[in-house]
Image (cartoon, rainbow, N blue to C red):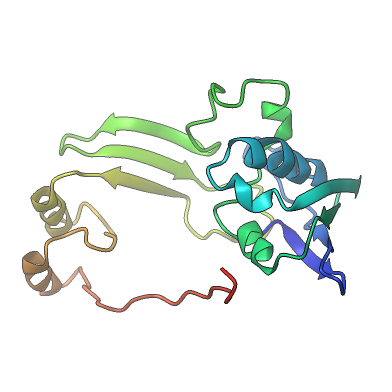
Length: 203
């Protein structure tokens, strides 16, 4: 969610967001309300697969660098959920404005992507994401980087976990018959615990 504080009018037709100050993109450029307006009105609605969720917006104004004023055609409780999810990434206007969005060099990779498609010898394809040194919350994130590796073969995924090459594997990453064996290793924890998620009744 790009807003630090937000307010919805009693009739549900006006949403005011106060943008958090001190937020910077990975190139050091400050994020402003104009980045929010551009991302939603000029990119998401026109190009994003779920852009239809934002077509209920009639207009979006930016009275100053840290305020976004949104006027809706009709009230939409589900819109707040769309603002807080992956449907609403905020992109840097200074890098995209006036250019071909679909064919932009950054269109198919994150702005923070440092390394991609590097084979490490076990059939994996790596992506490395470096920590933003200008992140608005001091001390976070607590890690310097995340390396995401994609390995198509399940047996290979089990093997690299057993060797200690990986620190984490997602849901269904290893076959069930390997999970019990891996759980016996001192450096691994296998859990069946799920996760919590909250969705509005209207979604």
